[in-house]
Length: 197
Image (cartoon, rainbow, N blue to C red; front, top):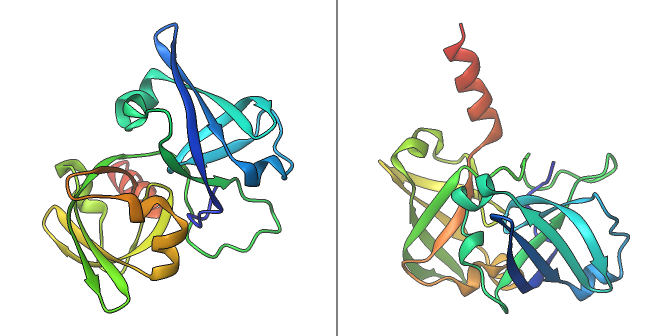
């Protein structure tokens, strides 16, 4: 589990095809100072991946075909900046919301405009995901926990404060870019429970 509170930004060192899937290596000077072990889960732009190799600041991860098909990872190139968050400890404050790191799909940035000192970002989600987006509910975009301002059919907008805009990769986005989206975990489970009644 994660909180959606990005801890640091890493950089893609390599993305190498291996036997039909991909192995990525991410570099993080911040995580080089931390106790990152083989088998640890790290959310990379919101995708929960397992550390399979560690060499100083570099961490490697195997990415399955399933993950490649539902994320942007297959398009990542050397030098791309990515949001990083290590998995929760029992003593961690839950400052964002409950995030699994299981990406539901991709949302597209339609509009980016300044709103006083913050930024308002308008996204479109795939038809199948729009029912999970609720006004004042939670959503995770590229691993960042955000509050939904308003919803209009398959579009929703969020307000990103200056701090979040600066310490995550949301500030790198341009209109037309796609981001990983994870909808609210409780909404997903609630829908499934209601379906089985």
